[in-house]
Amino acid sequence: MKEPAGAATVPRGSGVPRPSGARESGGPRDAEQRREQMLRAALEVITERGYADTRISDVAERTGTSPALVIYYFKTRDQLLTEAIRFSEDAWYAEYLRRTENLPTAADRLAELVANACLPGTDGEPPSYWLMWLDLWALSPRSPGAAAIRQKSDERWRSAIRSVVLAGQEAGEFAQVNADDFTITLAAVLDGLAVQIGVEDSEVPPTRAYELAMRFAAGQLGFDGKPAAKRARKRSR
Image 1 (cartoon, rainbow, N blue to C red):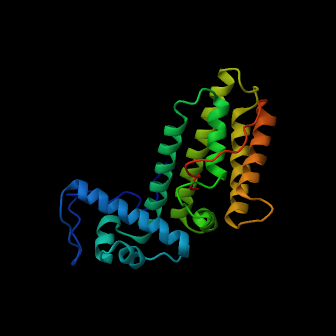
Image 2 (cartoon, one colour):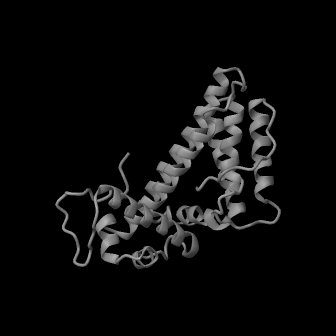
Image 3 (cartoon, rainbow, N blue to C red):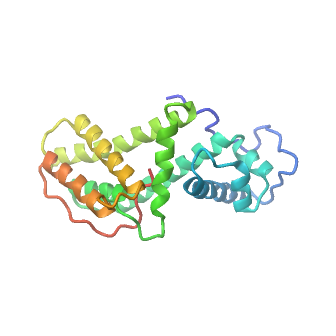
């Protein structure tokens, strides 16, 4: 699939001139830490102000750097924002794999996936974090860059669900439903519930969203749903 315009970072030594005022010291490790700091700051600003109103200068101010240095790393505002969302996704999947690698059943792994999608975390992640994805979905029909990152994220999200379903079917835990149809439906259910969580609908708090999603999944796949439990974080999509 074609990458979003400007999605790749500017590689070191690529011949791209450093903007005037963009100074950098230290080795590659320092540079990577600075880059990650900018991505985290971008996520914070997107959550607070919205995707459309996030500016290079906001990220520079929050990280104590110059706009020129942010541009050196990311070239454009759109690249910064899409890379920040990609960074968030990568962190979530790494945490999901870490938390599920020793779980004994596919049902346990599916419950963990649904919980990460619905339940608030214990790491101080604000409820408004879901607003980042509401912004991205709203922009996608009119922004090719936003549409590309949304599509890649959805493909990855569905792949995670599908792999758990297929593993459960192979192990005899889940009914032999059409895995692709179930995957698309559950992904849509979770994204729809995410909207209610994001707007803080009083009738659909996170715990109820989790229980509804698990009730649907258990009914379709023929297993006993798991009760809600505290999780380390929620899905940042």
